[in-house]
Image (cartoon, rainbow, N blue to C red):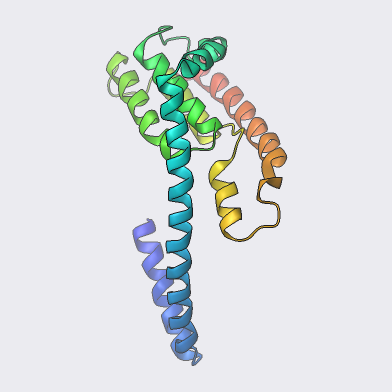
Length: 192
């Protein structure tokens, strides 16, 4: 769908610029946007490298194991089918930790590994298990303690207080995650 939508937007923009005699402004905005995109990418890359480094230190130390133990009761409630202490359990925990730190890009490969492990344990390979559905729900409405990516974007755009969004992000992500988990639990209970 998007592969048709974006070209349509571009073609409409070019036609609109030609009809209104603003082709010069269009060219200028294209190059300014490209420059801004490169600068934003470099900023996000630096932030992502920093937090991935922190995650690697946490993995090699006992910090991840400690956080996994803290998350155990929550994971037991959300994923009753998952064996405690197993590979899938740890992958789910790592994904949740990465999402809480606002590291969506780092959480993605961890999430894919967790989904693959859940699929390997899934009895019916043609359907998602309840744990897989819950995992998708949690990743979609992930709770973020430190919205790293958003803070980095705000910082790159010269925001006066880039971290001022932390409290609203906590409120929104907790409400979104709680309502999504509740809805997911209700739906998976009645739909088999």
